[in-house]
Amino acid sequence: MLKGILMSIEGAYDSLSSMEKQAAKYILDHPNEVVDISVQSLAQKTKVGEATIVRLSRSLKCKGFKELKLRIAADLALSDTKQEEYQQFQVGSSTEELISSVSGSNLRSVQDSLTVLLPEAVEQAVDKLLQARKIGVFGIGPTALVAEDFQLKASRINKWCELGASGDSQAIIAANLIDQDVVLGISHSGRTEEVLYALQVAKANGAAVISLTQFGNSPIADMSDIQLFTSTLDQNFRNGAMASRIAQLNVIDILYVGMVSGSYEESIASLDRTKQAVRRNK
Image (tube, rainbow, N blue to C red; front, side, top):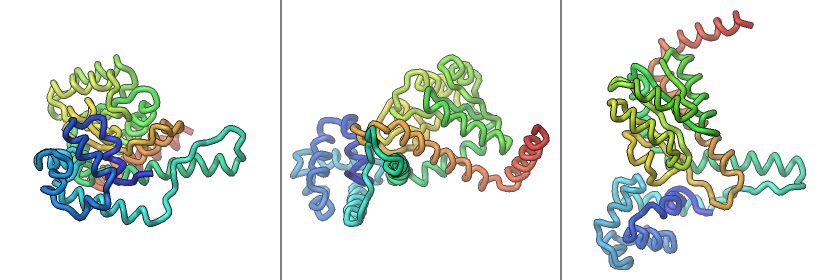
């Protein structure tokens, strides 16, 4: 199983240009060699231009080929240690195997996502969310549950946040956003049509767009101002929907804690008020 940036190259492969694919395939096939060669040597070996190597590196969210090589080297170092694979749950397995399979795969999803979640993107997202007059958060199906989790968390720290869990509700919310607002669109594939349309409406109205998708190029990620990523799960992994949701929820928790930390006194006061209000309702 590939790790880190190598897994990201594999996940982004289909969205690359033909020339970038040539370089990417060589990197995947010869990672140990690539960490010790120059951009000029890699360009010659793959019969592409040096500019293509640089573009590929930036497509993978690296500043350049040097950073790409450093991340590949880190992957290779990790491969020397025992890594848990995504586990398929087999019908008829014991309860112990069920617990191990589901828990291990969820943990792996979160760990893999840390390799593609850029700290600077998280920082930018937190700043935008804290400054927003109003936040719209969109998701369809399983990701609607992730969006609802964010909406509840944001409301508890007194952020005006509206949840769109259907195409119509998302379009209505987006139509009323302005340039002081932010919208967070959640889609594992990055291709959910309803979410994409609503984000386009919001952006046309001047709202900042934050996306949370699997790593790689996609319509939703490409049109966003700030891109947050989770890992691209193995295509043969049948429990991918469950594990991807866990990874998304982890990112939501990261954003929430960042927002609380960035506005600590106000957030704690709001949390105390909401906690007391909920207790009185029981």
